[in-house]
Length: 361
Ligand code: GDP
Ligand code: ZN
Image (cartoon, rainbow, N blue to C red; front, side, top):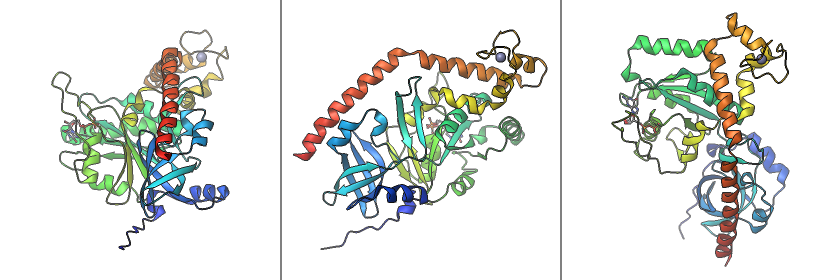
């Protein structure tokens, strides 16, 4: 018989001291470590050192699960028991290093989108849709997820160098020491730099509005057309996103990219907690507000408003803060969404139980 052992190094899949410590503390017997690279209904593709398995979770896990967060997600490190050469059962999910999630006000109702991402590449394009404020939204998200953010300014072929430099200056002034890479997926400028930025064994995701060029950039990195490029809609000049692929992609240089529709939507919902960190300046100022529950909009004795008036606080930053706050309150308010989600989770559990039965029989 031909030995088909592939021998992938776990380190190349992102395994490191963090996960090794967790692994050891579980004291498992007859289990192998693997990484969830895709989700197929209630089965998971798990990559191990000797190949890929289609894995299911146990009935006990389904029974004990109280939220969607108790289920594996793309990027998870799991302990599996192999049933044969292609099938396995997931015994444990290792604690996560980072969690990219949509959050609702009810702390239970989180939607996990991907986990264990090291760096989020926030893509913005230098065309007419360019928006400096939009970065803030993504920083909130990465901040809250524990993911390191970096910025990609794409479509540099559409602007003169002076304009690009000006934009870079603005970003630096506003956001400080964040890494910025400028690229064009068309002329391929900056792609070498982007490739070098991506490190073997680390996991990345591309965040950004539809049409900024995420698919184009990932395809360039993959040197293939795995991800469908949205056609430009003539009415809006915006790219329609047509991504159908789900899961994790492996780049030639050893980096990994998680891309799925959830990641593409994630920028829309901004969680509350993160806002506080991104706008520490405002939080600090708010200590001086007359009322402790001051909204910093029209309250008398508001130290934040005073700082804007005195030119001590950037007006744009202030306005963006208020805008994000409002959006966030909107998300907190949507009970309908929450109900819909709870129902979805119920259906998910029901289906998972049924599929597990089919799998075991
Ligand atoms: P996504 O929605 O972020 O994945 O964006 P796509 O990769 O689908 O790209 C949207 C549109 O922008 C497509 O028509 C691409 O060909 C175009 N595009 C992507 N990158 C660039 C670039 O660097 N320069 C220019 N001029 N167009 C680009
Ligand atoms: Zn105030």
